[in-house]
Amino acid sequence: MSQVDDIEIACFGSPSAVNAWLQNMDVKYNLQDVDEEEKKKLGAQGNGNVLAACIGTTSARAVLESGRWNAMDIYYPKENPGVDTWADSIVQA
Image (cartoon, rainbow, N blue to C red):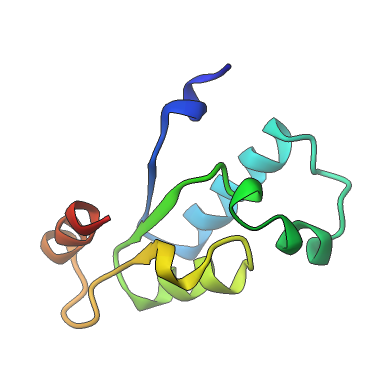
C-alpha cells in the first residue's frame, strides 16, 4: 500500500496537472504500455479511485476527456473560476 491509496480527492489547477496525475497513476498501476482507449475502460480504477476537484472548466474538461472519471466525480466552479471557488469545489467533493 502506498500513500496514494489514502487520497480521496485530487485537486487540479491545470490540464498539465491532470496529465501528471495520470502519468503517476500509470506508473503505480503499471499502465505505461496500455493503449489510451484501454485505460479509459478502467474508469476510476485508472485514476486512483479519486474524485477530481478542478480550479475551472479547462481543467475539468481535461479530466473528463481523459475518460478516467465519471462526470459525477468531477467538481469545479461553473462560474468565476479561481482559488476561492476551487476551495468550494473541494468541499463539495
